[in-house]
Picture 1 (spheres, rainbow over the protein chains, first blue to last red):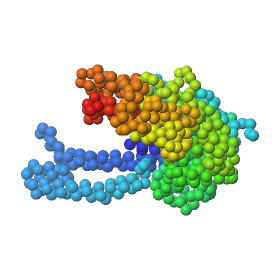
Picture 2: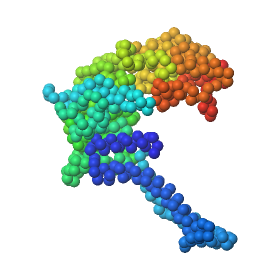
Picture 3: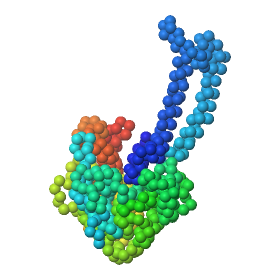
Picture 4: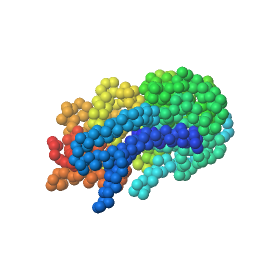
Amino acid sequence: MSSPARRRCSELRRVALNLRVGGWLWWRKVALPGVFPYYLTGAITASGGSWNAAIVAELASWGNTRLEARGLGAYIADATAAADFHRVALGIVTMSVFVVTINRCFWRPLYYFAERKYRLS
Amino acid sequence: MNAVPLLQVTEVRQAFPKPDGGELLVLEGVNLQLLQGQIVGLLGRSGSGKSTLLRLIAGLSQPNAGTVSYLGQQVMGPAPGVAMVFQSFALFPWLTVFENVALGLEAQGLPRAEIRTKTLAAIDLIGLDGFESAYPRELSGGMRQRVGFARALVVHPSILLMDEPFSALDVLTAETLRTDFLDLWSEGRMPIKGVILVTHNIEEAVLMCDRVLVFGSNPGRILTEIAVPLPQPRNRLDPMFRALVERIYVEMTARPRAVTGTRNEWFPGLGIGTTLPRVSSNLLSGLIEAVAQPPFNGKADLPEIAARLQMEIDDLFPVAETLQMMRLAEVEGGDIRLLEPGMAFANASLDERKRIFARQLLCFVPLAAHIRRILDERASHAAPKSRFSDELEDYMTPEAAEQTLRAVLSWARYAEIFAYDDDRAAFSLENPT
């Protein structure tokens, strides 16, 4: 959090204290909306990272042990192992389309909504 | 008059722990009484603990010593009859005007219909009709502060605490809000019985308050109390009004009587451990020029020059103090008078000005002389910044040390007595004369 936002935040907490806002009302009107944009930023970062990790984890080998799940990650890994560049390219394009679509259709609107409505500025 | 004061503050002391284990004394020995029907002003420069005192009064924090009592009862937590208005408005950006105003009533658990009636009444009173469904971001500063007022008034408090409520607004909007507030107050249309107004604007204090408490800094304490016996509505051009403004300036520039254990404000300590204000050399020469020119001719009345230069006391006082510290000018009794070097500076060419400034800086700002001496003594004529910031941090917080070094550096650059390389974070004699 930037320092002006931090200052705004502590001032809003003071308002809530002065008006003696407590209990569920405090969560509903003060705390949850206040942390929403920061929660969302964290969620976007986390979902990107975990999706990457999930794809990579579809194929894992350690010594003679080889674990494989069915999915895009395994498809790309197989294609790479077989040096089939057409399939590698197809896999990567599919993956990129997935990422862009999810970003455009889900995260970005949500982010702008949070930015507009909840950001302390 | 009512025998029990609305609010009684007795011998309040507040200190915060410092990182090095010591403590930063913010308020000491503060006594204050608010009677029914009064507006009391707390006037002082930033850092004099006014806002801290306001928070103690609202019960948002507890004093280290002394008591705050409301209608004879000691305040131990957020007091029900006390509402606050903030400088930055402090509105919830995700709530509409209506929801912002209604919040205090919802917190009291009132029935919905009652919340609605009371909220609409407050919105109506404060002149916000038609804006009920707007979000704060859609409103101008003045309208936002009206929401701040409505939100405070809707809970029908007996005391309204205002923390520089008009200082974030432009001059015209601020004046409109002040007069609207005073109209509502004098017509008795607000539920409040007493007001405490924190401000650093002397005219605002005289315009609005029945009593003005002038605060001093280090530590924050009440220097003096001035009654404003003028009837409302007041006229800023009234000679009585001007006389009171003048008198407050005199009080605020009075040389403190030798107080043991407190730092002298007007000759800020004489060692290198003095926190210096960040005042640019342009402002310093600007003020010298303004005072040297007619109609002032070397001696100016502070209220007059503040009005002419459109500076508030928080802008003007640090500049005047710096000139005083460098013995370019003298400030006393609400006046600023150029001393001989100051007059010479005003009439000099740029190079001559730099020479005069360098001489005063080295003579009267020990830190500048100290840095220059270290640089002279070293064969490399250079020293890392940490060499000095570590030294300063024995006396002050890291932020204050940074500010002090930046201040002395900007003066030294103007005077060309030493230089600084920001990439290497090192002071040097590289490009002085």
